[in-house]
Length: 84
Image (cartoon, rainbow, N blue to C red; front, top):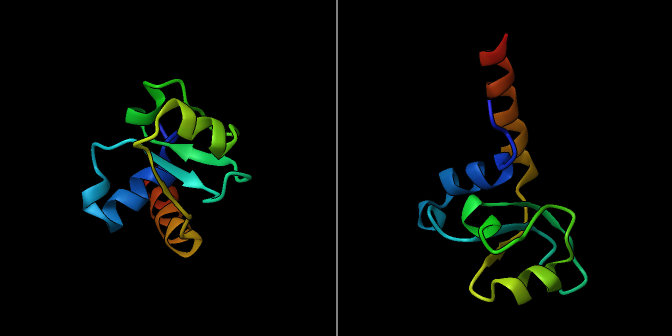
């Protein structure tokens, strides 16, 4: 089970237009940090815990979104139920 891009996957379920695009979840300012990124963004060398400013330099077309922790919690509960 690969949950490396869990936040991005949930965000894509909520906003299908993000699917297949380089997506960063995290702080939206240059001082923010990448909490998660899509596999499309990883192709540019982006990874979690990277400053957003650095990530945007590596991939200027990346879409940066703030996390929706209510939705992440909801989907996390579903995943946990499946694992059980």
